[in-house]
Structures are given as structure tokens and as C-alpha cells.
Image (cartoon, rainbow, N blue to C red):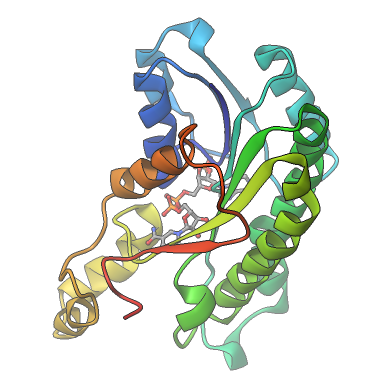
Length: 243
Ligand SMILES: NC(=O)c1ccc[n+]([C@@H]2O[C@H](COP(=O)([O-])OP(=O)(O)OC[C@H]3O[C@@H](n4cnc5c(N)ncnc54)[C@H](OP(=O)(O)O)[C@@H]3O)[C@@H](O)[C@H]2O)c1
């Protein structure tokens, strides 16, 4: 399979990339500021990596062209994993931070839906996944821009599915609960040092956080040739957080 992951340098994106790489698939990733050193453990001909800041939409077609040169115009699975959060109470927040979260989390996703959708449409095959979050439906105080961007992403998936699924392309969103990555490190280390940490586990039926590999395994399973009739959905991978 040919797999492309936007935001594959660390965290969930790295776990997804390594899941496919370990099975011998051809994997392309983008990184922004983190050198994806882990790729060096795999054969050079098996992977492509390129620097891309998704806020720079002029560069998205340039990056995608380079990926297509590597994959010989093939793409079976596309994952828009890139996402950022800039938390803070709305009355104190900077509008520029709102714009940045929107540019990275939803505008970049839209640009890639166009690019990847065009290629998959004419091949009449492919699966696209967009990383949302349980915050789209249950965002807390201080998470307004992040929650709004992920809610928009889920709408993009529902409409994108209607536009692309007639060509045999599945478009779905994955909404993790709390996963142990750099994104959550700050808030988790704060909570661990306070009594509030008990409350967070109380809200998760499975009483633990997720590991990046658990999100990667689910996406990998959905990308199997056996899964053929699901589109426009958002899957909560949250250990029962949304119950
Ligand atoms: N961790 C959680 O608890 C959690 C929960 C729900 C949903 N999610 C979602 O899952 C996805 C992955 O989360 P994560 O925890 O693995 O995040 P992470 O560890 O912070 O990694 C974020 C990824 O996005 C890339 N990125 C950030 N800004 C970018 C930009 N301007 N242009 C291009 N790439 C950029 C990063 O690249 P560089 O490393 O090169 O900067 C990195 O590969 C996100 O969409 C997030 O919203 C995470």
C-alpha cells in the first residue's frame, strides 16, 4: 500500500507511520519542525519525508508533487494528522492564535482534501482519514479554537464523503480521547501534580489514557481491504470518555 501522513514526525503520526512501515508498505510523511529521525531505522526506498508548514498553502501542491514522484502517482491511504492547540480563556485569547489553529487544523485539511481527492477520484479508489478529537463535541473551557476547528473538520468529513464516496473513496474522521503525546504532556504533568488528576480518570470508562499505537492500530484496521462500506463517520477512540 502507498500511505501518506501529514504530520508524521512524532506522536500519533509517528505511530501510524511505523505501523505501516513495519509491514513493508511505502510511506510518505510531512514534518514541520521536528526531524523524523526514526525513519532512519527503515530502508531508504520505503519512505519519503518532506518539510511542510501547512499554513503555507502555496507549498501544499509542491509537497504533494514530490510525494507523487516518490509513489509514482499512487496513494491508497491518506491521513491528515496535523493538529495544534493554543488553549486559553476566550476573553484573554489573541485572535491571531485562533487564526493559526484554524489554518493548521482545518484550512490545511481542506487543501489536502482537494489535492488528494483529485488523485483518488480519477483512480476510483482510496481511503482518507482526518484526525479530529472528542473536543469537537465535548471541548472544555479554554479550548474554544481547538474544539471549533475539530467540529469543522468533522463537517468537512461528512460533506467530503458525499462528494468523493461515489468514486469509491471512503472519507472518515478519527476522534481520540486523551493520548499520551507532546500535545498533552503539559496539561498531564500539571494534573499529575494536583488533585484534579483523579477527576480526569473518573471520566474515562477504561480509567487510563491512550497510547499513540492504539490510535494507529485502529486506523490501520480501517484501512484494510476488508473494510469497504463506511464513510462520512467520526469514530471516537476514547476508552469510553464520551459515554
Ligand atoms: N494527543 C491527544 O490527546 C489528542 C487527542 C485528540 C486528538 N488529537 C489529534 O491527533 C493529532 C495528532 O496529535 P499528537 O498528540 O500526536 O500531536 P503532536 O505530538 O503535537 O504532533 C503534532 C504533529 O503535527 C505537526 N504540525 C504541527 N504544526 C504543524 C504545521 N504548522 N504544519 C505542518 N505540520 C504541523 C507536527 O510536526 P512537527 O513535529 O514537525 O512540528 C507533528 O507531526 C492532532 O490532529 C490532534 O489534534 C490528539
